[in-house]
Image (cartoon, rainbow, N blue to C red; front, side, top):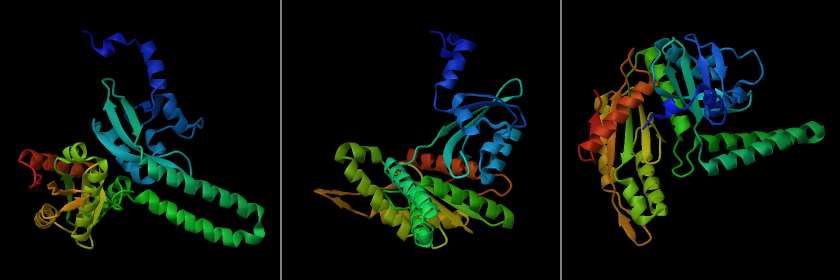
Length: 321
């Protein structure tokens, strides 16, 4: 059987690229834009001011894009793409080096929780409404300004918190990780992270239903939040995965924490309806290698260590090399 790429002609690719949701652009080795599909055009807009790939990203993520272009590495990373002065989206990005020295950039929007998105949209509509009212009714502008600020604070809180576990959501815990890596590099501090995955969680969902699975995640999140140090932070990184940041801590300190957290969760009983469940977790630990690791390579090392813990039989921890 012929491969798909052998059956698609260059003319077909034009229609294919313009009818998929992912943003695709062909760039030179220094990031200068050569060509792009319709989804990318919606971000770039008709303005000729955006001529390089890095200019579609937020200021904090531009250095990541430049680094990817320099090293021409084919790996995924998460970054914030700026839509306009008020809006941005978090995207899963990849850069594919081509034989002629150019690269193919692909970015896929990471959809947030529908309930959170609806709440944010509702709050943003309120903000817009208050802005219009404040312009048309100057006498009550101050009161509306106070209301608008309150709504904006609520919107920021909703955008940062996972709706189920009330921990930091993926976007915020990754952003904190980026900040901690930069801080550790600047001051030559130690930094370790732990990725925690609930063992056999799919079996829990399939056997007892998603409401029970949700309750398991809530109680695991409570144990993590209540049994980490004050300087540490924890967030929900994925479906049943959590990420802990341990600033000023080496792998030994992270290991001691992992042993303690594993014990607390192992002894926990999740009681819901007529069920009483016990769960365990597998933990992958990685310490930042100064001058070597970036935030995403640090994450990958911890993630690989977590899967090694899974392969060792679960309910244990592994420290990445």
